[in-house]
Image 1 (tube, one colour):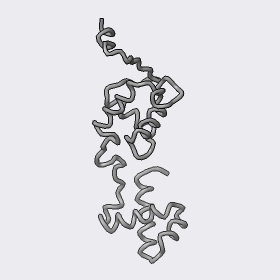
Image 2 (cartoon, rainbow, N blue to C red):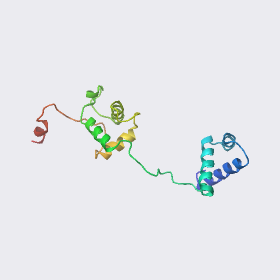
Image 3 (cartoon, rainbow, N blue to C red):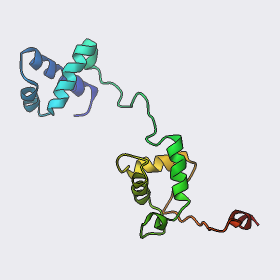
Image 4 (spheres, helix red, strand yellow):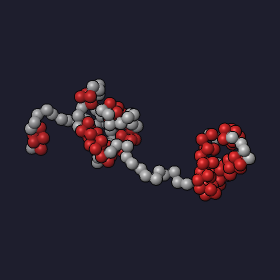
Length: 148
């Protein structure tokens, strides 16, 4: 059942069992939920009182992009090079490959997910539809030749 009443009922059951002296692991086993769910409910009750019986929003209070503006500029610089220049066998960028290279280049501590990389690319104003191939040349006059 997925309704606000089910949430309130579960929270009430947790709080009553806790008040009766049951351990969180026992409560979780009896209610068939995670022990962390029980601990969260008890902690929320201690913090907010009976207001904890109302379901809150699942939206984070603030959403900060994983990659800062400076790191996104580095992503853009990476995109303007061939994946082969980073030792990859492909000549086309995919989100997975870009995430791998960004991690290898130290832009993230862990390899980022495709949606996270997509968010960074979209914040750069790039409309990502498929694997990208960027043409570049070592010729210093390449930019001038390309526009004429």
